[in-house]
Figure 1 (cartoon, rainbow, N blue to C red):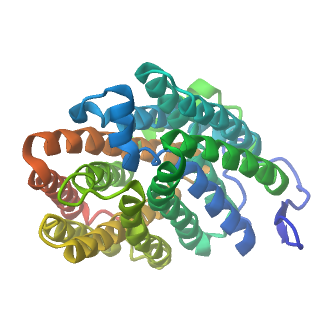
Figure 2: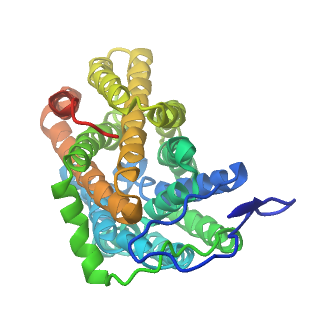
Length: 417
């Protein structure tokens, strides 16, 4: 494969094949230009933002649909439930079908779901549309697996880090954009605007992405689905990395789901735009994503994970001081996001090297753990806040972070190469 870049959209081309690939072989390791890598990051960031726009808008949605504050976390939880189902039933298709067509199809269906959210007339329609949008948002993971397959082995961690940087910017930038657009045109305008941007991205991807069928496989769809949990049950490294993902993203979701509740109330009474600015502070996690990928390429994945988990645990001591000091709280946000994204990229770099022929299944299975953690953190954090305020939210974050550190410590001697 070779890369071609002109004045317009970056184009990727495959060199002519010399013969059929073995049935069970992985895709050939090929190059990926800087421009193409950035396009992957942009597309992934826009897609993941769709699943996070709701977080700074929870209070407004609750008022519009008369949803109780203790249960408004369902807005995020149902999105993650849809996302989890997509990880199980859609992402593994990337190992047996053309990834370009899969990416385009999912993105178009995302546009429909986003329009449905914007036009929702009842809580039931809102929840169903959010679940459908989450289901289609797993296109993010197909993009990550595709980028990892196209990248050469010695740069795979760095490439995954760059794409993950786009995802981090999408996650945290979504809060600011959602708050700003909601203040100008209401929360429904957020989803209608995203529908337009997602449609534009579909057209760009159709021009730029190469055909993405990774191999000539005779495996059936059901065989692919069955093999995914088997991979994680038989490989302890995969299972440990999945459990770490579950716990660190439970901690991540605990902070970002509950944050809007104290900041929108007295004594702060911040607007949606002001609350969204806190997400921009967390974008420093994007820096950790690229750096962690490079460290993983050098064989330092285990220690990168351990140090990051220590930072995650320490961050909650600062986050707990939100009522007393906003500056200290902001430092805690920076530490938390740096730690979470460093662990996430390291996890992906490690699992992609375990079974190259099954990268879509690996990222799908791994992100199921992520989705369970995010959903758990979302609903648990709003309940903790309802019953114990911000100290309860902070205690919940400490529990998730400490559990992740203990799992890493118990498994640190497992070989990951």
